[in-house]
Image (cartoon, rainbow, N blue to C red; front, side, top):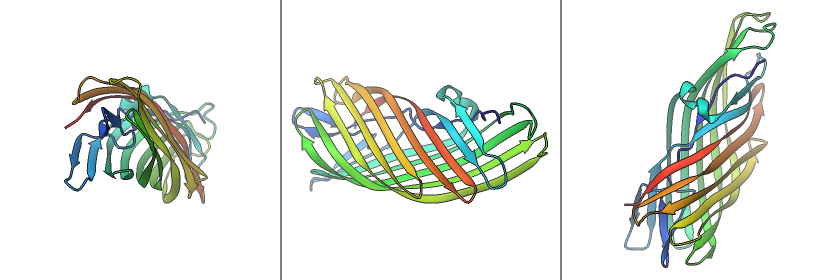
Length: 263
């Protein structure tokens, strides 16, 4: 079948500076902040909604219908995105941190099939929720940057409706979905090349319910002052899951662009 033109939203990210390391603020790529509060007992809290403009490629399927290949770049996002909500937060105490990342996307897409034998058209409607909860520990830190080891759990909940029309199979529509949990671990890091220019990124991989679950990103940023910074980079998030006819084997990837505001 011809790839269904569907895509998802996950990063035009608002990455904010979190924490202070002597003369330079250290960027936290896993917990971009819009609001930061430091309590008298040393705890530091960050929170941010964020956006990530990404395309989606891979295979999705439901029991009883052929697997459909999805292939769309991030430029198609506005044609197929129905709704998206994303937020991230972090609590830090010295070298210890706790973070949470929430992503919900609803998208749809359709196209014709290559030969029109089994079907002449296929469409996909998908709702995806991804929630990550983890903890980190700083193993390296100086006045220019920080390296954290992180580990946690990532919950996926996906509901897909696959519809086909025409051809030998006629008009058919089926809905299916599943929820699973993966254990994940990796690192996040940031480093100031100069008092104004910094690098930030992370790499996380795991599995459990899925055969593999991975998330990598790299950004470069410029700190204009203590309040405003700008970042640009790239992020990719992938998962390979199948169970009893339900298939969700996709990679979401796209550029990160944003303005960082510190309060």
